[in-house]
Image 1 (spheres, one colour):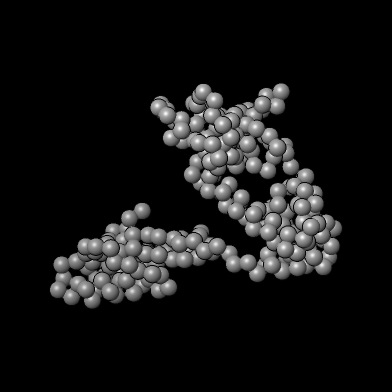
Image 2: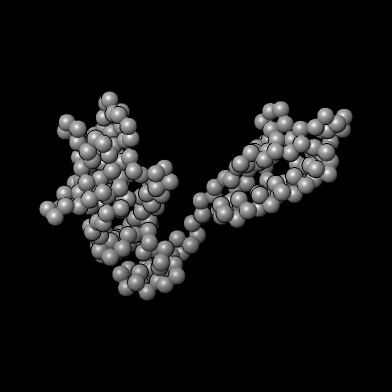
Length: 236
């Protein structure tokens, strides 16, 4: 799928630097893009090679596509979140390509080419988990079943939600009281940092659910602290 639109995020490999322009090869497409110096990074750039060097992989945003087909890109307008998403998608594509090759052998390249005419590989295979008809048409029912079996048994990537709280008290039984407050955090790893500071960690495949659970426990811990006369502070 070679069609690009303004605002699209693309993974690129720096090809060459000519004066104040950076020329890149756009991954997965047999086309070139250009980044002018003002779109490499914000502010004054003393040495462009502090940001880009040949063969380096970078994530860019499509700014403009001229009538003649020239593609103008920006590096500085890509957020950290966007960059991470593109790199993760690229990693997933490599993983899914490997799965297809292991099942389809020499026919994998042809199947991947057909998929990419209409969709990207990751989206296509994720959709195939819900409706396998398109995959079965391209790979055959038996091979589609094998591919989906591997995809469905893959472990979801776990992320760690982290929060920090501060607990202080001058009461003689302070250590016992603080331990009672920390006991609220069941299923959460509590690590002592220093001087009443504690780090909370919760590993989960669902970050939103984990964050909600963590915040609910923090509210409970704050209530327990007030009952025990402990000063409680939650670092947002």
